[in-house]
Image 1 (tube, helix red, strand yellow):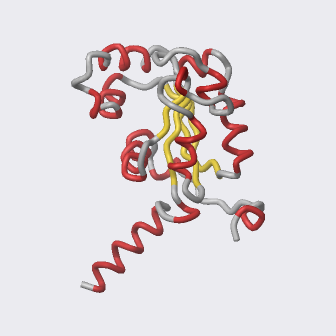
Image 2 (tube, one colour; image 1 turned 45 degrees about the vertical axis):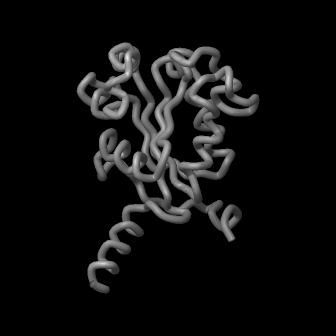
Length: 169
């Protein structure tokens, strides 16, 4: 039993899902790419102190998007969401850092930009819920799922940031 626990703990630690190694999936949606907001969004995450460990520009297939948004499949807007998300390139990213999932969600703001505070990405950069610029994982579990959907393990990089000693105690 102890060996099983240690094995599971080692897998979690090595995969980067705890503490300063926690990871989240962030995607700049087609409207954000078309409006040239990628640099601004990357800048905000970098200024916060998070580490970029994966980044790519992709034209997402409907198959990938149907899997990504599987939990929303019964909603009336599902088909339109898949069509919209496949209408142009998406910038897929993986960010790493302490409490990155929770913090990123706060940085994004509410799904409906009208409910988002100024200073959040959606509060500052978007107007309508159907074109809200960005997606972010809502839990560590969904981050794990989304990262594995959008990235192969070989596309994620482990590197040591020289600023980490200035960010973490």
